Length: 125
Image (cartoon, rainbow, N blue to C red; front, top):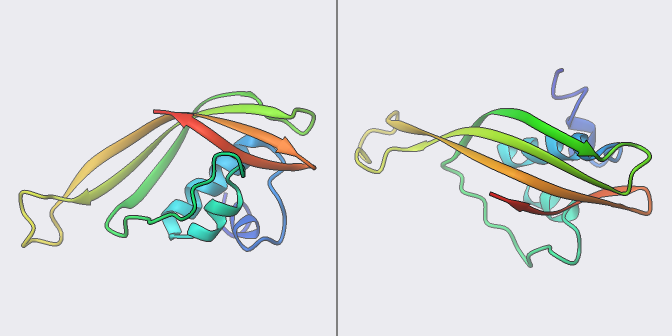
């Protein structure tokens, strides 16, 4: 699905995520585009950090949803397990900007819906 039809309206705050999975996908897009404000706004107030410093050298390349438990329009809690693929500068070859290494982040994230709005609560890596 094109960014403008999927996550673009969420990141621009034109609409809110309908499900925990939709919020997870939009948060991945926020990491990929450097939208720290969106990440903070969709983080539950009880676990939200005061600030967020995103690593500009990381290039996110793919999101794989491994599992979804609840988190629908009719739930107040949800869990989304995902793997996010990325590349980062090769520390052994700093003089070559094109030299990159591959990485992956695997997380089982918890989401909560309050006042008809989904929030990221926390995750287990």
